[in-house]
Amino acid sequence: MTNEEQLETKEVEEVAPPSLEEKIAALEDRNLRLMAEMENMRQRFEKERADALKFGAQRFAGDILSAADTLDMALQTIHQNVAPKTIVVGIEMVQKEIQSAFERNHIQKFASIGEVFDPQKHDAMLEVQEGDAPANTIVKEIKSGYTMHGKLLRPAMVGVKKG
Image (tube, helix red, strand yellow):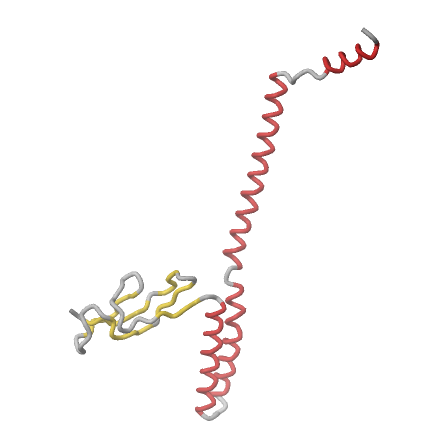
């Protein structure tokens, strides 16, 4: 064998497969790194969830501040003996601003009058005997019901035809 052949043989011999202990150590190291990465991800997700809960209403709060400002101005005009029509206009402006804030935040009012009473969407506040509506039909709405992205925010408070 030549010198070059002997060197190549030595290099091949030196690159022996890892021992069982080396494989175990490598796997333990990999496992430890994966566990640390998973813990970091869990902590990051928990912080994001906490921030979402803490600041989730921030957009809606910003949207509703304009309505609060308009309401304050309307209340100030009451104390200045302004014409009632001006006060009504101010209140209508507040209502429009609130409705716009609701729309931007996907909050929708749902209709109840004439609908069949549904305990999932309605709270019966009273029973009504007069009228010709079928039994268990909503004939009066005391407070409107609202949904957000299709999920019930507040049930409608209603009067139901007694059957």
